[in-house]
Image 1 (cartoon, rainbow, N blue to C red):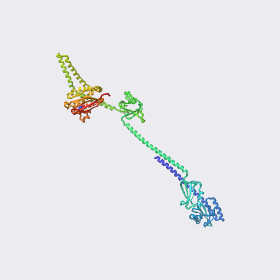
Image 2: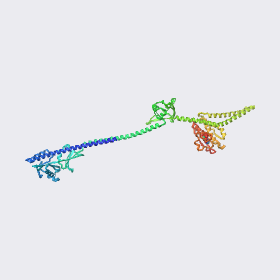
Image 3: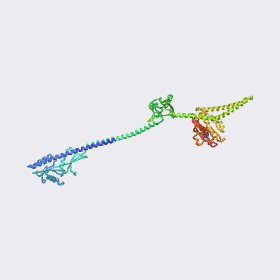
Image 4: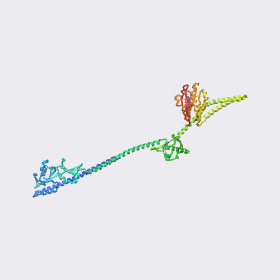
Length: 638
Ligand code: ADP
C-alpha cells in the first residue's frame, strides 16, 4: 500500500514539476510576448510621432519638399525597417517619395482589394493617422502602410505614408535572443501568415497570441516557444526516476512475495511446533534423550510426571541419575553402560527407578538410536513405561491363580479322599490278611520260612503301594512354586495311571495307553500330572453315559518337530459348538457338582511350559462322538 502511495507521490511530483515548468515557461512566454509587443508599439509609435511632426512642420513650411526630403531621409537612416516614405496628394498621387518615387499602390491591384486606398480614405475622412491592412507586393513580401494626413489651415491637403515590410520589421525589432527561444509570426484571424522570424526548429510546446495593434485590422502577434534541446536531459532524468521507482517497486514486490512465503512457512512451522508440543504433552509414555556420553539432553512431561523430577532438574545431568534406586545403583549403571555401548535388548528391558518422593517403580525401557537431521548418530532415545501397576496386576493374577490351583487341588483331594480311603483299604486289607496268614503259619509251628517269604514280600509290595499313594497325595496338596526339573513324560503318565486306576475300575473305563520312552524335558512334574489327571478324569466323566464296552480312554504320545504332543481321547458325549469357546474359561462347567476351573488351570500350566492345549472332535470314535484333548510341550529348554 505504502509502495503504491510512494509511486503515486513520485509520479505526482514529476507531474507537478512538469506543470510548474510549463507554467513558468508560459508565464515567461507571456512576459516576453508582452515585452515584444510593447517594443514594437514603441518603435511604431516613435515613427508615427516623427511622421506626424513632419506633417505638422510641413503645413507651415515654406519649402515643403525640401523639408520632406531632409526629414524623410533622416527617418530612413534611423529606422532601417521603413521601406519607403511617401508624400501623396489628395488623389493619392505621389508628390515625392524616398528612397524611390515609385508608389507601390499601383501594383496592389493585382493582389487583391485596394487596402491602401481604403486606409487612405479612412485617414482622409477621419483626419487621423491610419494603418492599412497588410498586403503583398511583387516580391511576395507583406507590407503595411501608415498614413498620416497633411493639413493646411485645417484642411487635408495630402497624406504622408510610411511603408513597412513586415518581415523587415520583425527582423529588426525582434532581438536575437528572442528568436533563440521563440518563433515570432504576424498572422491574421484566418491564420494567414505575413511575416515570421525564428532561429530554432523542433516541436512546438506552447504559443501565445496578442493583437498587433497598431496596425490593428485583426492582425495578431503569435509567439511560439519550442522545446529546448536540453529538455532531453530532463526527460532522461525523469525517465531514470520513473525507472528507478519502478525498480524499487518491483524489488519491494519481490520482497513482499518473499515475506509472504516466509510468513506462511513460519505459520506452518508454528503449527507444526504446536502440534508437536501438544503431542509431546499428551504422551503418556516417558521420553528421555541422552547424548553419546549419557548426559540427559531432553525429557518429556510424561517422564517428569513419572519420576517427579522437573525437566530443569534432569536435563544436563550425567549419571548417576537422581531417579536411580540407590540399592540397585550398580545394576542400573551396568545397564546404562550397555545402552551406551549400543547393546540394549531390542525388546526392551525392565528396571526399577525411584520417584523423587523415594517411591520405587518398575519401568519398561526401549532404547533407540537418536539420529539427527543429517543422519548422524547423536545419542539415545528411550521410551519409558511405568509398569508398576501392570506388574502388580500380574502378581495379583498369579497369586489368584496359585490360590485357585490350591483350591482346585483341595477340591480334587476332597473328591479323591473317598477314593483314596478305598484305595488304601485294599493294600491295607491285603497286608492285614497276609499278616494273619503268616501269623497262623507261624503259630501252627509248621511254618517253613520258604512259605512265609512270598507272603512277606507281598506285604512289603502292598505297604509300598499304600505309602506311594499317601506320598502322592501329600505332594499333590502341598502348595509349592512350580519347579522345572528334568522330567520323563513316560513316568508322568505312569504315575497318573496309578492314580486313576481305582477310579477307572469303579467307572468301568478301560484305559489304553502306551508308555513312551522319551528323553527328559524340563518341566514341573506335579503340574503335568495335574493336567493329565484332569483330562483323564474329564474323559472318564464324559463317557459315563456310554455302554460299558464303549468306555475306552486312549492316551497317546507323539513327537512332532521339537514338540511332544500328548493326546487324551474319549468316546464320550463330545463338545457341542456352543460351549467349545467357553471350555477354557474359569468356572465354566456343565456338571452339577463341577467347579469349571480344571481346564483353565490346565491351560495355564501348559502355557507356563510354553506349550498349547486345545480340544478336537474324536472323529475316529466307535460311538461316533468323543473328544480329543491335546497338549504340547517343547522338548528343548529355552
Ligand atoms: P469341570 O470338570 O469341573 O466341569 P473343567 O474345566 O474340567 O471343569 O471342564 C469344563 C467343562 O468342559 C465341563 O463341565 C464339560 O462340560 C466340558 N468337558 C471337559 N472335558 C470334556 C470331555 N472330555 N468331553 C466332553 N466335555 C468335556
